[in-house]
Image 1 (cartoon, helix red, strand yellow):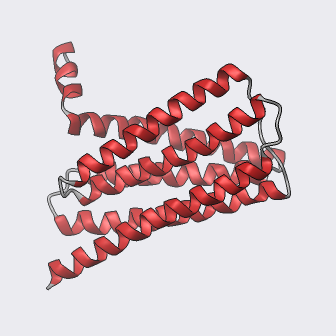
Image 2 (cartoon, one colour):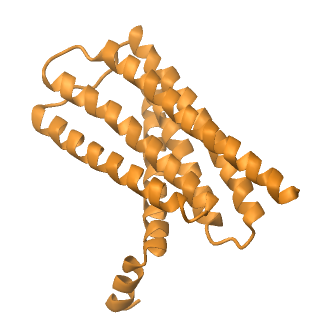
Length: 209
């Protein structure tokens, strides 16, 4: 592929979304395997559960990647419903493993520079996720909207990581606060997924009727 073709592809938002989704999907899959193996070898439930969440996020991106150009609206709606169900599982699992911090604090320590970097990128990710979710929802592409909900969930989890990084960089015990924030983040993701799932079910009924 020529350089001009690459530039042209990247300028197309739809194609750029597919490329970014594919690359981050690969990252999610490889990183999830690493976390699950690390958790299994060290006996850490926290890493295993975190790895499963990352694996499910990668699975959602895989569903989008395989079906984003499908012609059937019905198929896209069915796949979007599947994504919502996975998002509900992700939210519940995330809230569950973050709640273990009440009993078993297992937080990594971050220095100030790393904490500031994480905070900066997390808020940028959240802002972009919210913006894309609002813009793309108007297009009526159910599968794209479902992907945006997944990206929004990842951004919400990143904010929790920001809290952990900032608190630990100051030498504070972030276990209790992070557990509470993690549970709230998980519940928010579940609510987002349930609301969109209800909307999809209604749309499915309208198509049948």
